[in-house]
Length: 189
Image (cartoon, rainbow, N blue to C red; front, side, top):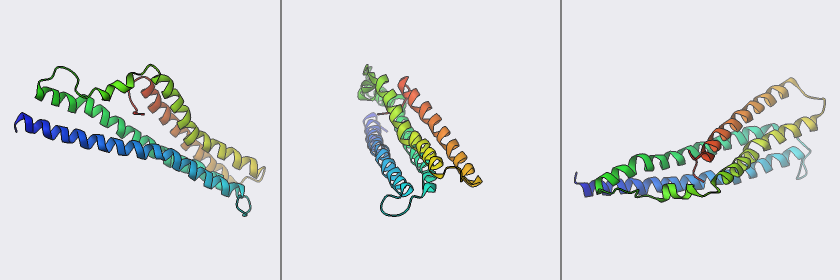
């Protein structure tokens, strides 16, 4: 295949990857809003808002909901970063070699991460991620146990324990992901 044809194919791949990346960013960012809506719905049932009586057991669903949505958020985050790393480390060097360029061709891939306030934004993003996907689940567990008082059943402890483990694993995953990004390794935001 001629160099021009190869460059054309690689540029099409670049366009498709950037399109996928943009779609994943939009999907990932919408997970925050979906989580807020889902948690709000479950909390309203738990508190009995809307005429029905309070159902404290509903609060035990919040950690499951936030863990599932948080994991989906993180999985998309990882793919977004993987696309960037592939473009920077594989695709761009191949195109550069074919066209005989000595300088970086897709500068935006790294440029926007050079902002001096990037680390600060990453720490703020970690706090937002943890608040949305982890702390809301912890608060729901606390609300459940506060509302049920001393009438806890053994199954509540089991489910609450599973919920707590899910939240700890999710918190660890967010810390690994966001701290890597704060050090310059990862996540596109």
